Amino acid sequence: MCVFVQAINILIVNQSIIDMCVSFITLLTRVIDVDGTRIMSSSSVSDQLVCRVWLARVPLWSLLVMSTYGILITAFERYFAVIYPMWYSVSVSLYDSTLINIVCSISSGSALYPELLLTLRATG
Image (cartoon, rainbow, N blue to C red):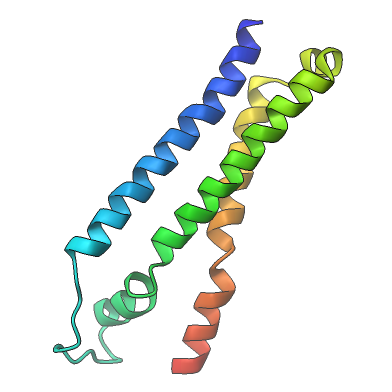
């Protein structure tokens, strides 16, 4: 039983860390305001990074998508634990929870990748 408690704990701790990062990034987007008085050049890497990543709020949106996926994964994990307790006790392991968290992180980070490609292509 201890392993299953740890599996749900991994999901909950992961969700807490993600939500803490969302709060921190939200705070930073409010504190760090890039106004339109500075002219950004297309040859400067830092200006391109600020324009395409920070002003588009890619870190914030990626973390919000990751948070949504994490809540869904936790809900499904609890659903299977309640509806199929015998299968759950035999099949679910700590490794499975960790693997699901990694897949969730990668998929949510890549969810906004097409948007970044479109901005790169548009600005050329």
